[in-house]
Image (tube, rainbow, N blue to C red):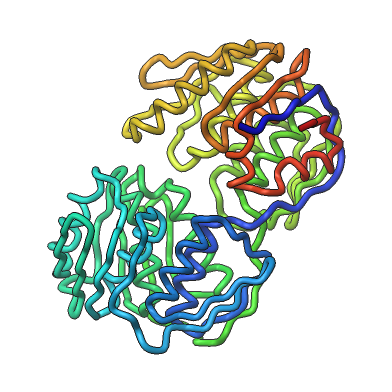
Length: 413
């Protein structure tokens, strides 16, 4: 079990984060089923590597060297793919199969239990033949009976990015209507931003909940660089807000709701077209009375930590509807932060955060984003903070600790 020691630090400098694996997933599926291309600033996470393996089984030829992915498209489609119990691959390959106009045998898929019933309902509604076995799915989508579907709640948010990407990749004109919960899901914004990079014709308005994909596509081979990850960029921005000044490179024109959340926290943040800049200063952060958690799951551990420097108490919620396993992990993390001085409690269906001082000690976060948030918390602790389970961070972002050290963070281990 790897650990680090983090001490009080005043950060200063400029950073560019690694790219986002969710954005990579949409681009891989789309380009592998169209004209192919080359993607630079490519992040090789386990999730992305599993998806590449699945697409290659279906007939693509995708090779990755260092931070560049070279994608040769599917010329003759394979009819069988072993997903090896990978959730991300299962989601995207199932979504693709719904619109392929063909038959696909999927071995060892992994779909959350609460989503399996919804998948069967989607298939029946669209006229897709779906046979489900213990370790196998067979999907036959020769003719779709409808060109629109409504996706709702937790199940809808799971499949929405995959259905939208699958329809676009296969050139099917399709309308996905989303309820309020699903339209705020981050994966939907990732798809929209991937389409922006591709200049692909689409329509998405959060306030209407409609995401429409058109048939029109230039067919050209793409050569593009992925932008920095919104997730990692927000954590680096949070670190500077907490203790320091500097610049985080990010194309701020991309549409992500968390940008607005972070902007409102402090007048020290200046946003330009290509970066966020945080000025020097020590004032308390300006949180609204309530933040909704939908679409920003990954950001909540950081908001817990930033909330210790809030000017006033505030709430995050309501956590309805919300996956209970994710909620339990957040509750566990709040209890851990309380051990080093944070004042966070869960009063159903809200987390209530009160400004507080962090004292340091030992903390053992179980999730990657919680571990990242703990590392950042160490910069304002009165004494050193030992953070365990750092391997969780490395698996998600191999550059995270080195990036913070570039900002003069005092991290040992």
